[in-house]
Amino acid sequence: MATLHRVRSLLSVFNTKSILSVYAPVCRFSTSPLSSELESVGFIGLGNMGSRMANNLIKAGYKVVVHDINCDAIKMFTDKGVPAKRTPFEVAEASDVVITMLPSSAHVLDVYMGPNGLLHGGSLLRPQLFIDSSTIDPETSRKVSAAVSSFLLQEKKGSWEKPVMLDAPVSGGVFAAEAGSLTFMVGGSKDAYLTAKPLFLSMGKNTIYCGGAGTGSAAKICNNLVMAVSMLGVSEALALGQSLGIGADTLTKVFNSSSARCFCSDTYNPVPGVMEGVPASKDYTGGFASKLMAKDLNLAATSAKEVGLRCPLTSHALEIYTKLCQDGHEMKDFSCVFRHYYFGKDEQ
Image 1: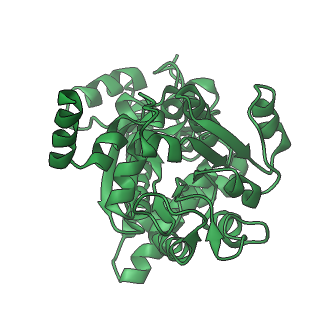
Image 2: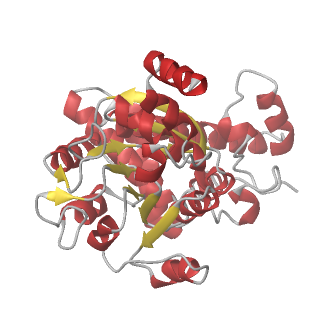
């Protein structure tokens, strides 16, 4: 009785829901409402990023069901005993939480609101939480969030009467997705963000709450704008250095020991032969496709136009990556701009 009294005293001081959200589902408390409510996860979109994120959820002990239009992607999971569903609606019917990782705004709208989409089942939904980790425009994120919140839950869960959506795009690329070290930028309800944090930390190492619906998507397109412009700056400088007789490896050492140091010089170098393990060392395969960078730059340019902000670097970067795609390099990693736009040379 003394122990029970002590537990009740502690719960009266702290927010029980917040405490349990920190530890579930890792500790798997059988009495935790959050661990039981959020343990069934539907994952839609099993591309380079999504497949690795789903794998990390499985490793963390979540009950995962998957869906993708690519049969080969589905087979990688069903061969391991992970159940697959034929439609997004069927995923929703089997899940407490649904995570989507899709290529574009159009795909997100179709998966959520199209025929057999996640929101196809009348006025009641089973999932209490929807998380979209796609990189899309903030307006689409807000539109889908509003649509989700117009439904009611099939079964009330704690204080939740309506389902909630978070826009939670990621940074870190395929390697971070594989290692479970992604950074999540999250927009939407802060309570929902805190509840979902154990899910995020099963797939990543950093979570940043950005504000209301759409702010996660806004943060992501701003982040990718910086990454695109940085890659162009590093590639241009390294190509110029080669033309002036400085080896790329030597110039990279200069950058990384001085004020030019950045992600594209010290972690994701674009020159083949300078750094192992990056796409440049693998003929620019296995990374972030140039067509996706062009798509993200277009999102940034469109958003800038909507708010009346001049963004000349965004416009010029978009022109360069659009040209790169038109020249047949759309599936190559975006760092291939060094070779195929600046015509830089491999490091010998």
